[in-house]
Amino acid sequence: MVGLKLRLVAVGIEGPVNLGYIYRLSRNFDVDELYLVSPSASVTESLRWAARASDEAWEAVVVGNLKEALKGVELSICSSDEVSARDLLRTPITPEQAAELMSSRNGTVALVVGRESVGLTREELALCDLLCTIPASQKYTALNVSNATSIMLYEIYKARARAPPYEPPDAKTVRLAEAYARALTGRVGGDEDEVGLAVRKVLSKATAAEARSLLSLLSKSCSSLGCKEEARRIVEAEGEA
Image (cartoon, rainbow, N blue to C red; front, side, top):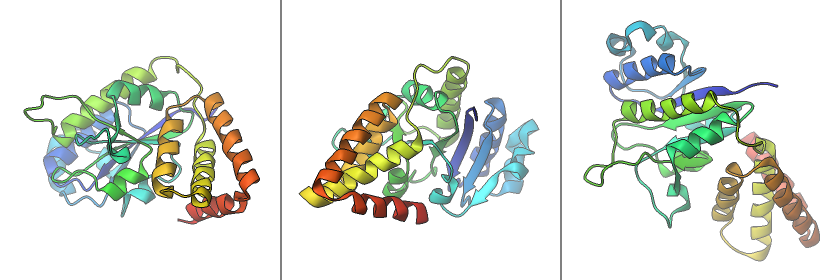
């Protein structure tokens, strides 16, 4: 077995204090990989707040965009305080659910946190499998990025110490099912992006057996409607993107 590897992805961190705390939190909660996406904060200044975790700054991987930071990831969960029951991109799970889902994986999982000023864009949210929100008072729901990161990492840390509650689906099964769903939608009509996103979110929370059953149904449906070739092209395009 490969084992679980936790990747923390911090997008566009603007303040050196928060960046320093993120280095420190990575050490506190056994983050295996730290990726920084286009940070604007000064690394030199941030070291003042990193304390004994300052070497995390030199081990961090700096990339230009979120898609690059999510390469090789089995499951990605982003954190945001903006939620909506009607918006698929902003339909959240709880920190406890996120931690259980991530700790059950056998491979690399990514926790994605966003900018202090504007958080994550819709395009960035769409790259993640699931959205998590931390409950807070309606008087002020937005948490500081390093505070939110500490809460999420603490929940994941606790969950990693427990046995995985179920066998999750692998990333290949989820992506293939999403491609079949998109191809079917293109054939019968509808919003391919919305349907594909819905299937990805459902299967990211499903068991491996549930995912295989749905994949089998979608595959047979594609065969019946003659859209398997289109599904193959979608998978290939995703791989090249």
